[in-house]
Image 1 (cartoon, one colour):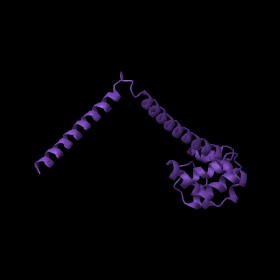
Image 2 (cartoon, rainbow, N blue to C red):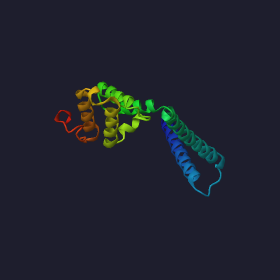
Image 3 (cartoon, rainbow, N blue to C red):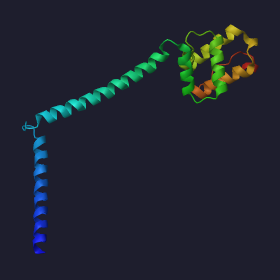
Length: 164
């Protein structure tokens, strides 16, 4: 049995020496002056650059396609902006109705700022007439302006019935 113990020690010593030599080879592979494994490093760096380039290209194409979908469709852009807002569906439909009846070429422009929303509301009032738009809708547009922009729009008329 003692010879079995010595054989196991010899194997362990050999494995430790093999591990040390393996670590040295890895360390020597990272040394700048060592050109023994230049094919490996060339292939490794080329593959890494290829994967990074492919990932960047796929990201660019997906972003480009997302912009391309809304580029020539102002109504689709308007609805995509509305869907990003945390508004009830009834408010989204009301904003769409307002921009459609105001005949805006680009309805998304009404959502840029509180001033453009007021401008679109005033165009809507001019297009439809004061008496044709229910007071509830005008008040709701004012409430939406407060929700979106924290902005209190100016009074619609000097009449107190149209005030916010």
